[in-house]
Image (cartoon, rainbow, N blue to C red; front, side, top):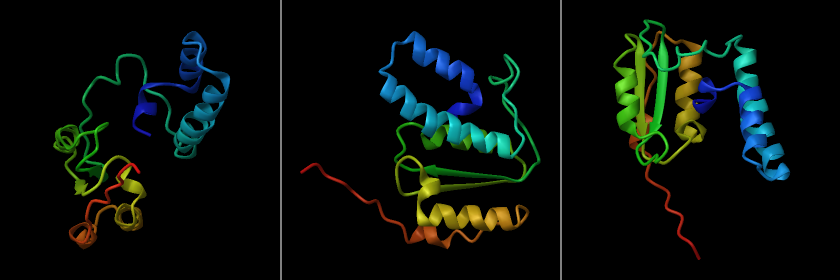
Length: 138
């Protein structure tokens, strides 16, 4: 959860309350974005960053997988390549799609390979088989 790394559940709930967000929207967002997203952090025993550390660029030799959609308006490839340059053992893949490239069949395959052996370069041949899926309004 990329945005969640800069917040806590309490901060987001307080922001919803302060912005007078419709309760049904706030409830849905809390379950799907906060509880589910931050639940991943709890599973991996990751805590929120201390104040002012979220803006400090991270450098690491920990194996890291970065998946980005070529047409992602929220997290454009430029930002990901900048981040990837800071990881000595990073694997960067750009998939021909928009946001949430990790949810594609190819993205899931790359993640599965990476989690099975984070030191081995994943077979990314599935990327060459991808084509954008256009959805036009009726």
